[in-house]
Amino acid sequence: MSERRLRALRAFKKQAKRPAAPRPTDERSGAAASTEQQPSHETSVIAAALYRDGCRTSTHDSLAETFQRLREADGGMAWIGLHRPTEAELLSVADEFDLHPLAVEDALEAHQRPKLERYGATLFVVLRAARYLDAAEEVDFGELHVFVGPDFVITVRHGAAPDLAAVRRRMEDTPDLLKRGPEAVLYAILDAVVDGYAPVVAGVENDVDEIETEVFSGDPKVSRRIYELSREVVEFARATRPLTRILEGLSAGFEKYGIDEELRRYLRDVADHSTHVTERVDGFRLALQDILAVNATLVNQRQNEEMKQLAQAGHAQNEEIKKISSWAAILFAPTLVGTIYGMNFEEMPELSWALGYPFALASMAVVCLGLYVVFKRKDWL
Picture 1: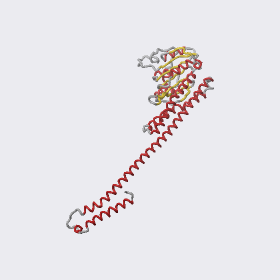
Picture 2: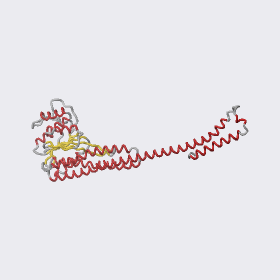
Picture 3: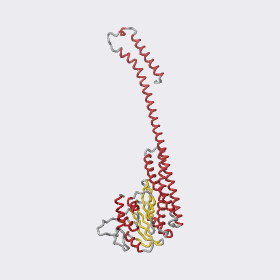
Picture 4: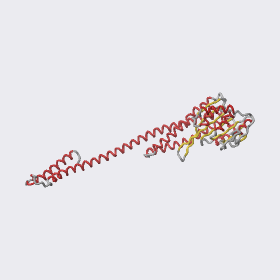
């Protein structure tokens, strides 16, 4: 986000403080209605509900209705799920819950690294969820931004993963956990994201095994697949490795913010699973490096074998050429003598010589025999 946009966001937060009484709302967008005509759009509110003592007390279709009921309620917690919200929707949420402009900027822009930031009483967590697509044999990454305050949890999802509806059902089925407050919801989201890595780990492990088989079978397309899987593993490592720091940051605030002891145990369990996933991903990265090195060695060996076969074929061809050349030279000698005496010139002195014919034959035989001996000694024949 540019500096101009950031200044506008801060100005919006200063000027848009709403009174206790609810303002007229647009039922589709959930944002406060203005005197100007607002363009209609599909709402990004996936779910918005209020909870008290671990039980859902009300469900709402718009942000404005949720804000109003939360103001009217005496205690309780709001849990709002957004999917790719518009700027107006996210700014209305930021105004209602006094979210920090920098965190709102990150949630609007997306493409953030996993991290944990604390702005006063509000936690801002960025997570990278993942899912394995069996048909395409590739990893699909999503991005999740979570705002956690004293009485609210806001999730902003970019991508298909994770399935937060399942998280909400799980928490509603365990009211003893849900009544522990927004930190319990954050735990459930972290647990869902980390558990979602398990199928991805299994899928990547299967891909690694397949690649090992392809490498030793000599598949020419395996190099490209190694490269593509290596990129996915690197991206997977970028999603999982920061989780250790995030969970350590949460653990560091246990005492200061009075986190429930039972909830601490749950978070430590998530940290253990996260560490296991990180170790597996690092193992995949090292395994792919070894496979790439082995594949390069095997490719060089195959190239050397091909060069050797070409050299052997060239050597055999040279041997045949030497034999052909040798016999051609041997046969050329009598041909040359016969050609000279076949010119039929009258002044050739040997034509009237009585020993000329046997001398010519003897010359041919001597030359042929001499060439044969020479070529034989040179192993050309």
